[in-house]
Image (cartoon, rainbow, N blue to C red; front, side, top):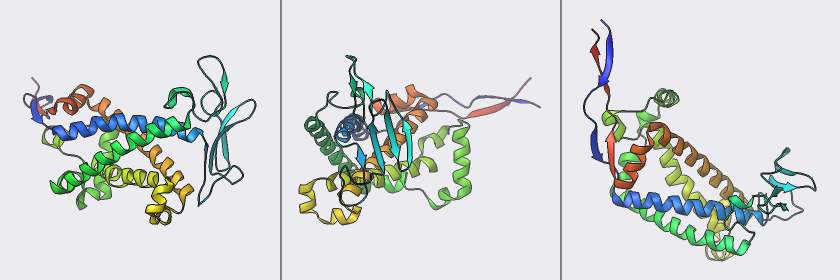
Amino acid sequence: MEYEERPAGPPERVKRHRLSTRIWHWTNVVAVFVMLMSGLMIFNAHPRLYWGQYGANTDPAWLEIGSTETRGYLRVGALQVTTTGLLGRWTDPDGNVRRRAFPHWATIPSSYSLSAGRRWHLAFAWLFAVGLVAYLIASLINRHAWRDLTPRRDELRPGALWHEAKQHARLRFPTGEAALRYNSLQKLSYFGVIFILLPVIILTGLTMSPAMDAAWPWLLDLFGGRQSARSIHFIAAFLLVLFILVHLAMVLLAGPVNEIRSMITGWYRVPQARAKEPRS
């Protein structure tokens, strides 16, 4: 006997996100957007990264975005690729050739200003940091971090992780009760970003401040110097961008209307499992 799939029941609406979570989420969207673009403006002032205590034009940089008279380039170690028109050497809206690392449309402000970029970056960095600290404290008090974000031992088994990876690759997203819980890959990614990556971004940002170095000199020892902290800050920001891109892709694939609506209103329509019934 053959079977065909049919919805197991009417869609169920549940309260998925608290108001505080939704406010924190959308505040972070704005803060991270501004910090990334203002950070690129700050990077334009010295588009090279080093390891150690010091960094100057004559010191060997492990990453550099630069230009010659005819082309722009990105160099990472010994590898160099041409990036004319995008990085290093590009044309502004008035048709003028500019020789800066990142183009005008990727920075805040769009015209070169290191001081303005720093003001934008610092203002939204404090907003971001205060929100993160408040979220971490609340998550520890209400046990959200342990209950929903910390992977269990059985979820970390290679077989379980491989199964989740295959399900995601096949675009088979959880339904029913399973859709209301984070799977092992989600737990690992959210835990890593919230409790490791974001604190690293904040601490390395503080390490680049001479005032903070004077107040907390252990920061320099923790990250191996101000230039190492700058490199780690840049790498962590790049990893955060990758996480955001994957997150947006998953939202689009899982159903953007339902996912975005739940983060605005708090209400989520649970995807229902499909029951099988015999075909005539």
